[in-house]
Image (tube, rainbow, N blue to C red):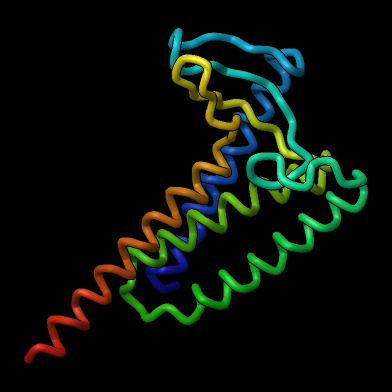
Length: 166
């Protein structure tokens, strides 16, 4: 099995496992809509759910439609990411890690949508009264993976620019 597939299997296993374990823990340890300060003035553990997308987009749409819509969108995105991953040349480990992180996050939230019809969020960062919307490990994996992919793209473009100058 090639190196990029080891990245995929390892990150999917660890990422989805950590995401689901933390969501299970928060749902068992805290009542829904609870707030537990961890670092006063900066970070709380909360237990909230989100039927919508990022920042609760579309959360007011009818429940069965939203769950099916986001599950379908997630599957399409996973298909596109899987295809792009498959097309990666051997040895492109940074991009493989980036795609794997994004896919792990998408799978983590897809599991919630299929199982619960909504996503569990529990990380609440804020400064004073300005709160970032609550999020979870899967959301973090998607953002970190996107950042890794940007770095991989910049590296590839930098290498292409350097070879064009010769």
